[in-house]
Structure formats: structure tokens, C-alpha cells
Length: 323
Image (cartoon, rainbow, N blue to C red; front, side, top):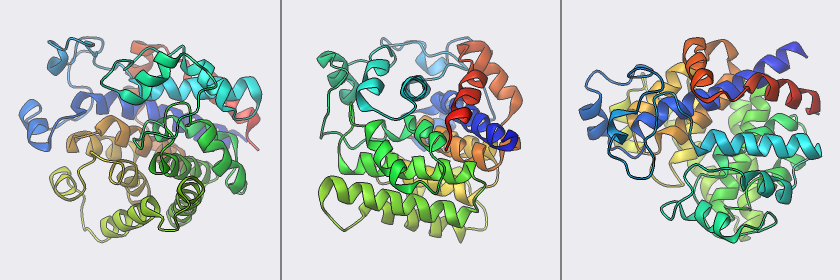
């Protein structure tokens, strides 16, 4: 049980650490990443708690070095909902998410529409972004990997308040399944297979299609990266730049099953750019569970100091519910 708790806590730490480090380059092109960080991102590039330089003139929010985004905020909202119900119910998830404040503006349509409606039980069939996948890890923590049906059913419950498109639900199911298998200590091949199966099932249940578009993207990127002798940010960015549903989560899951270090995957994702915080947090969650010792303790100490999330308490409580 101690080993499972360690994996769960490392999963949560991987999410938050990847989110905060990845935020430094979110939305930047690979070329702009190099312009802002000529030596590459090697961790937190500046004093913790100060404004990330590129956000100094941002009118929406002056994001801080070490600050986590809505990805972690809503992951913890899902966790609180699960701790209340001992299950995954979308109305409870919705109620907890209505307390979230980050990235609630018209530029993030999925979250904006949900908060404008102010209805905890709201269900949408729209939006194919990765916003559901980046918060779904608590579902994978709750259910062990042999509970495949519960994972596939629980992922949409954590998603449909804001994301109801087939690719979004497929990405969420794949991420939850990968997290669950990693916590169980599964080999990378088992993790990728379970993620594919979950993605295909969720996509089919929403769209009726048997094409399994997202599952195929996961397998394609994974199998390709397995053949590369080394992974470099410039090369990955050139082929799989994470800026759409068919690259963001598939790339994150591929990195999490090809690489052996949460810290290394987080830095690679951050130096690629694009939706770097999402790729880094999803990859960090799975690799944190797979290889708990590879979550950088110094980075996590910064995240906890800046955000005061109290992830240890969440990890301990969720571990007690895992079945």
C-alpha cells in the first residue's frame, strides 16, 4: 500500500510540477521558446514567485514563476469531488469546478461557457480540446487498471461539464487509463495498450465511429518516437508540435511511455512549446506514477511554496479510496 501511495503522490506532484514549468513556454512557437530561453528551459527560469518575463505585460494575468494553471486547479477540483462522493459524478465535479478562477475568460471558450452558465449539472457535447484530459488523473487514481469499465465511464463524468467532444472524451479516458496502469506498476507497453483501448471506447461511445482517431494518434506517435535514437525538442516540435487534439495528449502519453524520467519529459515538453503545460503535466502525471523517484523534489518544493496545494493530503486521501 505504501508503494501505491508513493506512486499516487508522485503522480500529483508530476502534474503540478509539469504544469508550472510548462507554463513558462505555453503558446510559444519553438522559435520563440529559443528566443526567450536561449539556453533552453532547465527548470524554473527566475526567482520563484516573480512574474514570468513574457507575462509582464499580459492584461489577463501576470503568471508567476512556480505558479500552476487551471490544469492543476481543476485536477484538484475533480479530486475534491471524488473525495466527497467516493465516486465520479459530473454534477459534483461541476460544483467544485465552479469554485475555480484561473483562465475563466472568453479566450478559453470551454471554461467561459461553463462559468457563464453557472450550472454545476451542465452537460456539453462541444469542445474537443485537452481541458478534460489534464484534470482527469484523479479518476485513474480512484480506479485500479483492472476496472477498465469504471475508468471509461468515470472519465466522461469528470469531463462533460466543459468538454463533450469525442476527441476530448477519448483523450480523457486514455489519460485516466494510463495513470491507473502506471500506478499499478504496469510496463510501458501495457500502459500504451490500455490508453489506446480506453480512447477507442470513449470515442466510439460519443461519436458512434469505429475509426478510433485519437487512439491511432497515440499509437502512431508512440511507435515513431520509440525508433528515434534520442529525443530533442527541436525534432519533436518539427514533427509533432502540440497545438491540436491529435498531438497534445497523444504526444504526452507517448513521451510518458517512451521516456524514463518525469523531470526529463517535463523539460522536453516545455522546450517544445505549444500547449507545453498540458503536455508536461500529463506526461509528468504518468511518469510520476511510473517512476516516482524521477519527480524533481526541488521543483516540487517551489510549486508547493508558491501555490500551497497540499498535495500530500490529497494523495493520502485518494489512495484510501483506490479500488
